[in-house]
Image 1 (cartoon, rainbow, N blue to C red):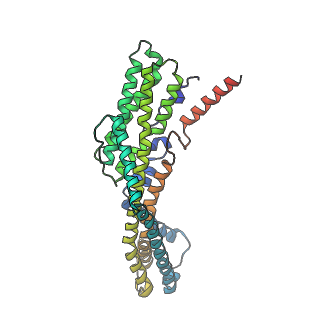
Image 2 (image 1 turned 120 degrees about the horizontal axis):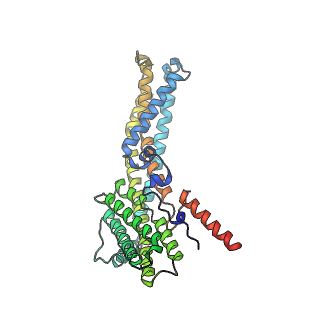
Image 3 (image 1 turned 135 degrees about the vertical axis):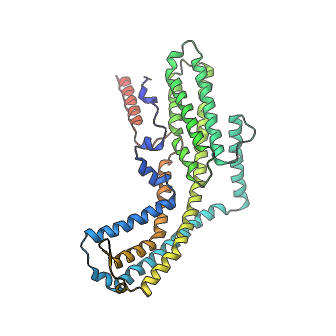
Length: 357
């Protein structure tokens, strides 16, 4: 197998840099507080309504027709009731996961206990931390310690210069592990502070690179170095199931938050819609502000309030779906296109052509 620096080149340390997204987009999709994103969505909707009124063809006569307002807000009543029903149905799936016979609950307990014991054995500790953030830190610190052992094994030899790629890989892994561990320190589960550092820790690439280097230098490595590689790969493989487990718990947590947010916004939205249908008279709202009819300003604002349940739903789903998209694969698979993968593919193609000749 021919060596190619692109094959083991270190990708960026953050998910944002690896996928090539802007800070604003990542902030909006996953990092920002969801209630703040809800306000941004509602404010953007209100601004869009005003912009259409100012720059689009419009007439105040249609606004003064009470029947048009009744029709608009009656449709919102139907939409709100439907969305609440849908959210409650989704919440039932979360409840169904938590409700089960004794045998299933015991199996869940046994699986989690066995996994923790495997981690404790690999990390050489008596009892693994109970907090999710500290538990993930333990996994990362274990991989960091084994990377240091591998580095010491290959750099302590007289011919260590030929293992510069391995040293560069382990140095990068240690550096990245420390950064992610610092980000996880003190993070509370339920906040995105726990999950974002986990998304930044690209364990799939680390497993792939470790296996690639072990295969590339198989004939030159000592038995101790091969064992150190195996230990490092084992510790990285623990990270996948752990991340998926906490991601599942996080998604369930967020679904509960979605349900509560939609229910909080549903009753005010229905109350506003009911008032607009039963009593509101746009003819009694006179005057203008910043060149816009006050009646239009008020009706648009009240309409945006009725959209609050949908804004909450959209704000939370944007983050949940983004997280799910970034973590679809478990194991040494990278689904998105990157320069690193392009380099790897070209290297593999060159090796295949050389073999054919």
